Image 1 (cartoon, helix red, strand yellow):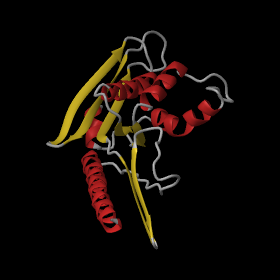
Image 2: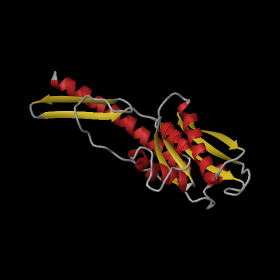
Image 3: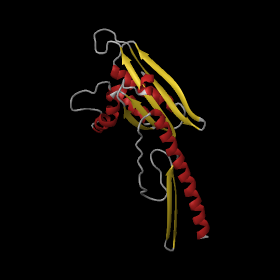
Image 4: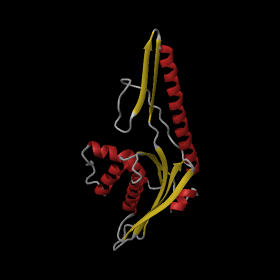
Length: 220
C-alpha cells in the first residue's frame, strides 16, 4: 500500500512540476516578447502539509513510512499578462487647463499564443503623474474584469508610478497613509491603485522612455 501511495504521489509531483515548468516558460516567453527582465522567486515550503495562503490554494501531499518522507507543493498556476503604459499631459505644471491622457498595450498569454489589446483614457485637466496612476488603475481593472487573479508584469517609463509602488507605498501604508514630508500628493489615486493591484500579483518594472524600447514607444 505504501508503494502504491508513493507512486501516486510521485505522479502528482510530476504533474505539478510540469504545470510549474509550463507557467515559468510562458512567463519567460512573454517577457522576452516584452523585452524586459522577470524576477522569479522560489519560496521554500514552510508550515503544515495542508494549508491555505491568502491568495490562491496550495496543493500539498505528505507520506510517512520507515525512513521514507515525501512532500510536494505547488500554487495553482495564474494566467500571465504584460502591460506597457505611457502617459502625457500638455502644459504639465503650467497655469490653466492642461489636458492629458494615458494609453497602454495589454498582452495576455493564451493557449493559442499572445493576445494583444490597446486601451486609452484622457482628462481635460490633469498632470503627468495623475495620468500615470490612472493608466495603472485602468489596466489592472481591465484585467480584473476577466474574473481571475493574474500574474502581471507592468512596464512603465514613469519613475513616479514604479518607484511609488515599489518603495513609497509600503511606507505610507505602514504609517496609516501619511508621510513625514506632508500630505501625499494624489492620495485617492494611490489608494485606488493599491486596491486594483491587490486583485493580482504585480511586478512593477521601469524602462527609460524614448530610448527605442519598441513597446514603450508604441504605448507612447
